[in-house]
Length: 300
Image (cartoon, rainbow, N blue to C red; front, side, top):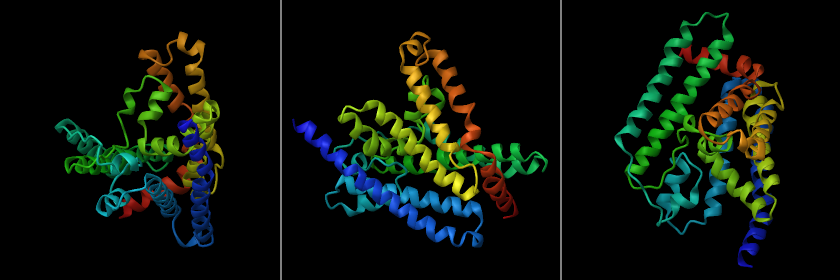
């Protein structure tokens, strides 16, 4: 009975938190769209990303109801890469100090990303713009998600904080569900807490799955398509394809084919994630955001 009450309460509060999130985004976009000609599209993209991330930070911090530890709260709000406020702020969370292999991997990803952006991209002929955009985007992800943010997480763990790495070896995933539980764990924790789990507790698991991926798509459309001034809806379509693939993976036929385990699961996941990726990083995004950003970084 108590669990049902908690579930109903969280489901009731979900629209409020989503409304706050939407209001912050709409306000920011209204201000910036009116002055979009004054800043480069890629600066506009990163501005939206920062506002989205900051809003998520505040929402998770408010939901965690911190008990007056302002030092830990400030560290969570401004330095912790993940979005699991309850775990980070709890005094009972177990903290495993990072091993030397984790440090080596993070630094390796960081320097490989620098190599991609600073050396390989400038060496690509100007007419091969799509290749430049692809290599540049991979480099930026390596620098930021697998490099700097992971190094920040490792530093916090070394200091005794329950920090969570954003990337949990996604290349080892043997299923689509497994991949999206490893890729960007911060966004995973956020969507689970505010969308998926409330709907699961109300016995609407399928709706929770589709709503989670729809939410992911809409957020990526905000960050990707709006600054690119094109490709609207394509990132959302990409994430709906992921939801469809996850449902197929969990079906009786999918389990019979081994799509959620072993090398067949790994191959199915790689094809599902990579084949439609042009929907996520579509042509307007490459031309109007990524390539100008790489050009400006090269000039710098």
